[in-house]
Length: 93
Image (cartoon, rainbow, N blue to C red; front, side):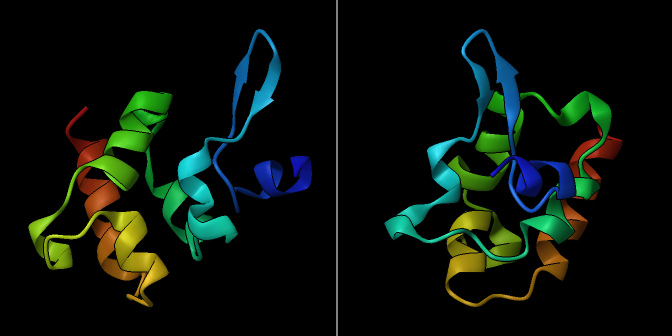
């Protein structure tokens, strides 16, 4: 998994216990597709675990048919709208 973190195919953050991979990335035991395209769109100020999880897994977005970004991507949605939304979040910080 550490190779995925380095390539940004998965989101990871450091904790006292070591590198952590949040569970929201693995709904139904499968990896969310296209995170390697979405994660680089977040700026350094928006990389906090709560910000990333909130944006990707908790908050539905009107632009994504009122789905969360994770739901959108798992259901086969194109990653570009998620990338654009992540970039707008990064610009807001």
